[in-house]
Amino acid sequence: MVLAGNKKAYFDYFIEDKFEAGIELVGSEVKSAKAGKVSIKESFIRIINGEVFIMGMSIVPWSFGSVYNPEERRVRKLLLHKKEIRKLHEKVTQKGYTIVPLDIHLSKGYVKVSIALARGKKTYDKRESIAKRDAQRDIQRMTKIR
Image (cartoon, rainbow, N blue to C red; front, top):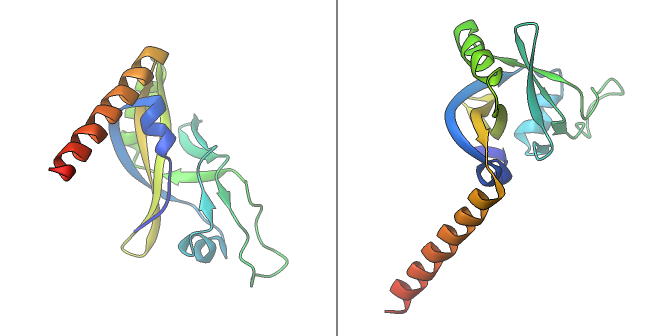
């Protein structure tokens, strides 16, 4: 079950490799995330000292929580295997590669984030994507009419 998505990631980047990572959440953040009060639109991922962090992710504080609710936009650690982190770090050091969050979903009751190793698109690539999408839409309309 997808809780939040990042459609812009597919438009702005060529997705090369996908990973699923756990998120280190505190207290009532889990309840709030499961309720769908989470956003990853402005979020990005950094590797710092061999650990992966997601920054800019927003989880609205749980309304029934105590006064000790964590901050809405705090930095959260992502849980990945060392081998995966090493692979990501090697690629990110190359020019043009970045790590982007794709969506937040539930997997066996746990809140997980899908991240991708991505390469940025140029403006002409984006125009090409728009043209392909429009052509596909026109084809579907024509088949629906007939």
